[in-house]
Image (cartoon, rainbow, N blue to C red; front, side, top):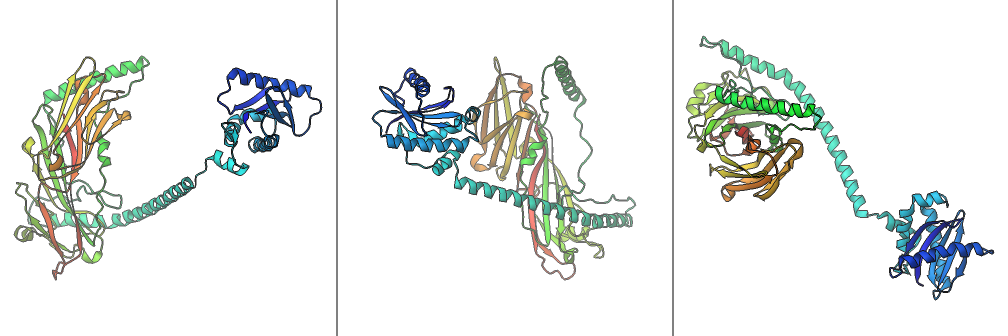
Length: 518
């Protein structure tokens, strides 16, 4: 059989749907065949359940269905029995997608019906399919997709349950920690006041390092706020005020203006936490690097703030002694906690309590050693960033380059954030690494997974259609490293009295705090 087209009509002869299966037929010819059928049916008085009418060139096989007609247009040479069998299959398809056989239901489901018709006839010839197969094909059901979705749902539920359990655990540990940390810090304060020195010492608080319990101790190394030169500060402040007034004026005139971010403070959030399997005694050595670098070269300020902190999870080891090996050649002055034995540290490099009756509090990060190391020159920094914006007509071409200046360090998760003019998408022509345009923050973030001697230099080049050279500063940089400036290493942890070894874990990490090119 050769099936030319399938059509659905209303009782008064209005065409509701027509699907052509032969591409050789012209539109005018098909229109003539479609318009002929209502005239032939109206003139046919004796209508049966399955009927057909013929013209000189085609045969119409049709079936009345309540308020509609279903008609198949075939050639006169086709097998009438096959035509009727195909008509019955088409008649079963319509109730599958339409709740009733009327004009409105056909209109509402016209595309579903056409898709089902296409599964029955291909290029004028019927396919060997049944109603169940047609339903499966049109639904485009995939067993693999169902399995994938079920796995996704199961993973989401597991993650949610894990999150709730962690939240309960963190809340309980935070409550327990609040009851013991105050006593340890208070003991330090009383010890300092009862010493031989006439100047009372402030209580020594835990360093910046965060805990697994959702709490963070105060930062003991944060100095007085630094202020720049008065002339330069006034100049920068005046420019910011003029830009703000200009943007405010545009908003008053009804313009939608977005603020250009001055810093990308949240870029540091992308640096993942280093997960270390913790033993009963966990020693963490951390350094934070702050640097203010001038865009034309030179260093405004730079320093390293470091600390050694303990977290003892087993109360049996709250009097442990930490053996440190100092391999650093730097001039950093190490300061020991007032409650520790300073003489033992100076002679044996051992961090040990003065009084065994005042142990370390368990499950709390406690700072025991700290230092500050100023960096006198730009050559002391691990990474040098150069940003060269060139004014075009119109637009700006920007070239950014990094150079690893300390060859003995490996930097990880490096993110270089370059501010852009508001609502301006960059056109990147060259990038060593990956980049991401943060439209909401008007910032281009250049990402390098790791920088070492194998890729000690890299370049990012892009253009923007508007703006000026001042829009691309300050450049904010974040990275981390397991290599420290002050090279301290934990060699052993022992009990206070017997000196027996204690199972311990250690963690060393350098992170950036405020690394900017101004």
